Amino acid sequence: DLFSTKMAARRRRAAAAPPQTPDAKAPRSSSAGHLPRPYRPRLALLLPPLLAVRLYGALASPITDCDEAFNYWEPLHYLLYGRGLQTWEYSPVFGLRSYAYLAMHAAFARLASSVLRSKVSVFLAVRCALGCTSAVLEARLAARTCAWASGEAGVALWALLLSSAGMWHAAVALLPSSFAMLCVLAAWTAWMDASLPALPAGSPPADRSVRKAYGAAIFWVAAGCLLGWPFLCVLAAPLAIDAVVALGLRRFVARALLAGALLAAPSAAVDGYYYGRFVLPWLNLLLYNRSAASGEGSQLYGVEPWHFYLRNLCLNLNLALPALLLAPLLLLAGRLVPAAAGEPPPRPGRAAVLLSGGYLWLAFYSAIPHKEERFLFPAYPLFLLAAALAASEARRVAAALLARCAPRRAQRGREGGPHGVWPPLWGLPAAALAASALLSAGRVGALVSYYGAPLEVYSEVYSEVSAALSSRADDSPLRVCSGKEWYRYPSSFFLPPGATPAFYRAGFDGLLPSPFSAPPPDGSRAIHAHFNDGNRDEPAAYTSEDRCDVIVDLELPGDAAPRSRAGWHVWARRPFLDADRSPSWSRALYVPWLTAGRNVYANYSVLGRQPLMVMLHGSV
Figure 1 (cartoon, rainbow, N blue to C red):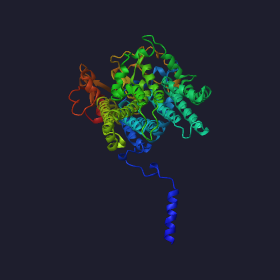
Figure 2: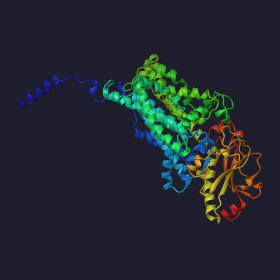
Figure 3: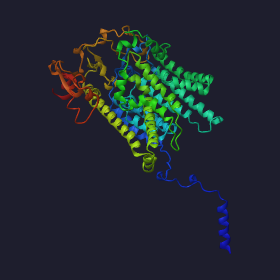
Figure 4: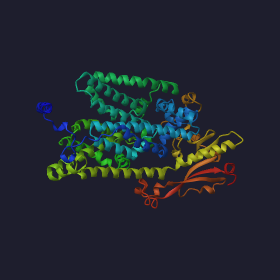
C-alpha cells in the first residue's frame, strides 16, 4: 500500500545518507567534554566603559607636568585667542616644538570655542576629545587582541586599559608623548591585522590585505614620529624590521617614504608659517638631546637613577608590572601547551616581536639621565598588552600542569568550570585583575583628592575675575600672579579675557616663559633676546608682587600667613597634600577612612587685594 511504499523509501534514504558526525549535531555542553565557542566581545561592548573612564579623566585629572601647560596648552591658547606665554623652545632660534601638532588640536578647539563661551569649557572639550579618541583606539586594540591571541587575553587587556592609573591621565594629556601613544594603539592594531589575513596565505587578495595592514602601521608610526615624539622610532624598530621581512626592503622603503611625504610636507608648511622660516622641530629636538655630557641639554632639568621608571611603573601599572617583567618566560612556557578549541595556536615568537618595542623603550629611557613620567606614555599600551598575554599564558600553563599532575581533578574542573576550565584557574587571574583595579583606583583617587586643588582654584579665579572685570570702570588688565607655584599654573585657559598671568620671585632661578609679543604669526616669528637653551634666569620675566591683583599660592609651614600681608585677603582655599610631611604610602594611594588621618595638608589659596574684594563681595 501507499504507507508501506513511503516507509521503504525513507529507510533507503536513511541508509544512503552518511553517518551524522558530532560536529553536525547541536553543540554539547562543557559537561560532555566539549568546549564552547571562545568568548570574543564586540567593540560595542568594550567601548562604553572606556569612554566613561576617559571622560572622567578629562574632567578630573590634574595637570601633572608643567611642560604640558607651558609648551602645549599655552601656545594652543595663543593660536585660538592671540595671547599666551611663549617658552624658549618655541623661539625661531631653537624651534624645538611643532606648531603642526598644535594645529591639529586647534582645529577642534576653534570649533568648540564657537559653541562654548567659557575658555575653561574649551579646555575640557579638548581633553574630552583626546579621551574619546584614546578610548576608541584602546577598544579596537583589545578587540583585535581577542582574535590575534585569545578572547581571554583580549578581555584581560581591556580590563587593564580600563583600570590603569597610567592610562587614565596619559590618555587626556595634551602632550606629544600622548599623541605618540595614540599612534602606537593604531599602529599595533594594524600590525595585528597583518598577521590575520582574511583569505588563505599566498593568495593575491590575502597578500594585498597584509600589505595594506603593514602600510597602515607604517603610516601611524610615521605620524607619531613626525608630528609627536621623534624617539618613537626606537619603540617601532621591531615593527620596521618585521615589515622589511614581510614586504621586502623596496616595498617597505616605498611605503615609509610615502607616509613621510604625506605627513612631512604639511607639517613643514605649518611650522614654516608660524616660525617664519624652514624648521624641522623633530630634528632639532633630536639634536638638542644628543649630548650625553653632564649638565647639558635635557639634563639641565634634572637627572634620575636608572630604576626611576620601575618605581614609577609600580604606581601606574601596579600588579601589571611583575606580569610585564615575567611575560617573556611565560610566553616561552606557553609554547609547550596546545591551544584550546577555537583559539589560534600559541605564537611566542610572534608575540615577542610584537612586544619587544616596549622593552626596548624601557631600556632606552632608563639609560638616559633625564627622566620624566610622560616619556613612558607611548609604551603603556605595549606594557599592558604584555601583562595581558602573560596572564593568559600563565593560566594556560597552570591548566596544562594540572592536567599532567592531577588528571582526575583537571577532568572534574573541565566538566564543572566556566569554559571547561577548573574554577580556581579562572578565579586567580580575575582576582589579580580586580586587585590591580583597586590599586589603580586608589592611585587615581590620590591624584584627584591630593593634587586637584590647582584646577579647582583656577576655575574659581576664572569666574570671580570675570565678575570683577565686568564691573570695573576701566579696561586695564588684572594681573593674576603666582610665585613658587608657577609650575602648577594650568594655562591661560583658566583666565578670562582681560586678565593676564604674571610671576613674582619666590625662590626659582631658572628661565620662565614670556608673553608672545603679538598675535600670530608675527608674535611666533619674533625673537626674544633673553631666550636661551641653558635655563639661565631673566629678571624681566618677573613682576613685583605689588603689581599683582590676585595671587594664587600654596601656604606651607614657615610661609608668611596670607592675612598678614597688608591689603590682601583670602577668597578661596582648597586642601593640597603636603608631600614632605606625609607618609610615602598614604600619599601614593587614596584609601577611604585610612589615608586622610595620616596625611598632612596645606592650603592652596587665592588672595585678592582689598579693593578687588570689595568690588566682588561688597565687604571684606
